[in-house]
Length: 487
Ligand SMILES: *[C@@H]1O[C@H](CO)[C@@H](O)[C@H](O)[C@H]1NC(C)=O
Ligand SMILES: *[C@@H]1O[C@H](CO)[C@@H](O)[C@H](O)[C@H]1NC(C)=O
Image (cartoon, rainbow, N blue to C red; front, top):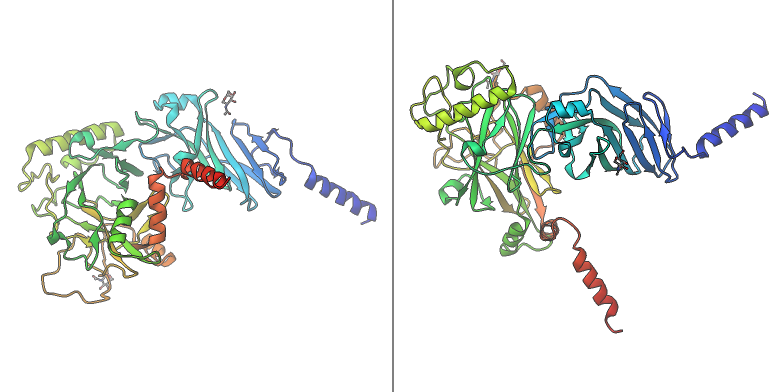
């Protein structure tokens, strides 16, 4: 190589490095694109009208592809309502070379107006779904989206990293924004689970259910006043945070057929101000903490002997036909079951229990609990969702004792549980696929409770009182006071 070529190469490289990309750029899929690192806007428009815009603190490269076979639009988490449909034929896959310090990154997707119309989706109910890290669901981030109804685009904004796969999704609810379900046992308050995909419902206080089921189900959540002392004998020092129980009733209720491989993540909202006051009353200091957990009063398995003939809802094979028809059928079945109202003598044709017989006591749920500090909720997975749920807490670092699984018979009085007794191995054919569950447990040590410090509770309580934002008016007042004193 001559010195001339070397310097030419050097010139070429330095031009490439230091000439900023023009502000607006028509880009192709599968093309390497440069992101300037000098905080000038990068804006790329793709052939399908999708657009990527971002500032960047370092020079990076970007490549965008279309995925012709994205996961289904019925796998959605993060929204308050359901169901979802796809508003694009293909998803968008974005890759950078570790661009983690982007500023104001946004992904704008063009909505197909025909798909919008065909699916009767209100443009206000359009979202950018981002594929979850385990590639199993589209995550919706409601506060980070923006919709332009003039040019039919939807954006995901405020991103520091845009790597991932994205698809425009439409929510088929009448309500826009929060679509919350009211508590109650009537058919008006029923959540209809279609028995495919992942369905979420959020209730009026933030209680949240994420259901993955293989059978159509209707589900109601009601709130019940008071907690009797007798219900708490298995809690080993844990005490209830609230003075009410969530009662979850599905139309499959006491029967747990093998054909319904249902798993649900239940999320209970934490009232930080109430917890703060309880901790203060317990004399917990700044450095102290509590263990917060969820306990369930499961159903007594099948007191009426209603399994056996169950093939599907209403004794018919589960309809594979259109979802809406299945939904209507379910509503009718549930209504009929309620009107019939004979819980002790379930008919073979309709085994749906109308009234649950519950375990006498609450027991801590033995699964991995996760604290969602942003939304102030405690989340835990359960296999059998019917029954009652409460939030509990206990002072200090102690964790709630291992107890029987919900759904198991309670221990007879006086028979002390063996400390550290390992959970019984289940050779269950019903329930979760064992491989996945094992892999999860290897990845993270499980704890069924979450430690929350007094400091954290104080911060959560402050945030709660100021609507989740910085106390702006108080800061203004304090600032003015501090700067006018003594002048
Ligand atoms: C929304 O779309 C219209 C029409 O294309 C455009 O003029 C306007 O600038 C867009 N708004 C934003 C915030 O991008
Ligand atoms: C589970 O299955 C294995 C293999 O079939 C068997 O060796 C074991 O005893 C079973 N355990 C229980 C608790 O039934």
